[in-house]
Structures are given as structure tokens and as C-alpha cells.
Length: 248
Image (tube, rainbow, N blue to C red; front, side):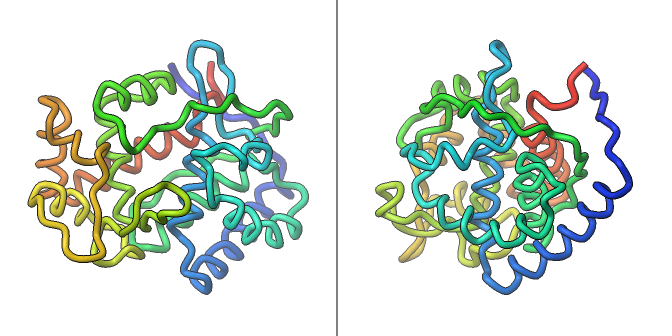
């Protein structure tokens, strides 16, 4: 299925460029790339390919009480002063633009950004996002509902190179990699090694990637080939950020 992106006006396009600059400044100053990426993911990852509900259409502000979104109110509050400077932008575009910036500013791949997402008023139902304590069947069910592939699952899991778990939010504590503000392929290297140093963690949903005949070879590939990881991550992130948007 191809994409037909809506046309946006010159004023809107200029606002996107200026907003991106402001987001770069904020994320650099606050060292908040991980939680900004999470808000973009969780905004988009509610999409259901069958019912065409949920997705990256600005509703996460109404979904902050969901257990899967614990702590994301912090990101929303951090971002709001910038959003107020660009009232022309939809929240749908704004949060996905922020996610793109979070990856790029930490050394990750450049991800194309296409504006034009409308804002919707109906929150997505609770319970559509991945649960850290579950395994491969759950991952395939959740990401399959979004319309994403096995390769997308593994590539997006590599986003855990950024950030850490907070016990009060997820029940887990620790970071996945030695430097949680650098986007690289170290997540896969550490996952394969089975060795997590003090203060570090791998979740059951991470370890499950090693137990699957399709997932494990991708983990091994990305652990040794960062360029391949970056290419596949950028593709998967773009798909996630555009779920239900600009479809034929």
C-alpha cells in the first residue's frame, strides 16, 4: 500500500522547520530524548490496522492515565511550551516530529518526516501497547495489530538503546545500555552477551527475542552491523509514525 501525503501550506512547512530547531534545543538542554521518543512511540502504537482506530493523531494527552503511559505526563509537560509557540501544527505532527528529533540528536539515523496528520478527539482504547513481562506471541500480537512485521519488532526493540526503566512507572529499574543517551547498536550486543552490569537490565520482552527462530538472527545481525540496524530502524520508525496516515 502506497502513501499519498496531504499537501500542507508554506506557512505550515516553515513552522515544522522552526519547531524542529526548538525541539533540538529542548532535548539537548534537558537530556530528555528517551522519554520524548517514548511519547512518540506510544502515541502511534495504539493503531489497529483492522478497525483503523488509534494511531499518531494527537490523542495521547487523553491517554496519560493508562498504565502503559505512566510517566509520559512529564514529556507532555516538557513539550507543551514549544507546542504553544506553533499553534498551526497539529499535536499528531508535533509529537512525531519530536520523536524523529530524539533519535537524530542522540546519534541515530535520520528519519523522514511528512507533515499533515489530523488531530482526532477519540482516545485510543487502553491495552494496545506492549507489556514488558510477556514474550514473543504477545509481541507479534501487539505489533501485528498495528500492521508491523517481525523485522520491525526487532528493529524497534533496538530503541531501548535509549533510556531506562523506572520502578515507579514499569515495576522495573535500570538502563539497557551503558550510555542511555546514545543511539547505537549496543542494546543488541548486550542482549546477546547475556551480561548486564550493575544498574542495567534486560526485560522479559527483550530476552524473548533470543528465543525465537526469526527474531534471534536479526538480533545477531544488528549486533554486528550497526548500519543495517540504522537502516531497518529508520524504516520501522517511519512506518510506526505514519500508521493510519496518508494511506491509499
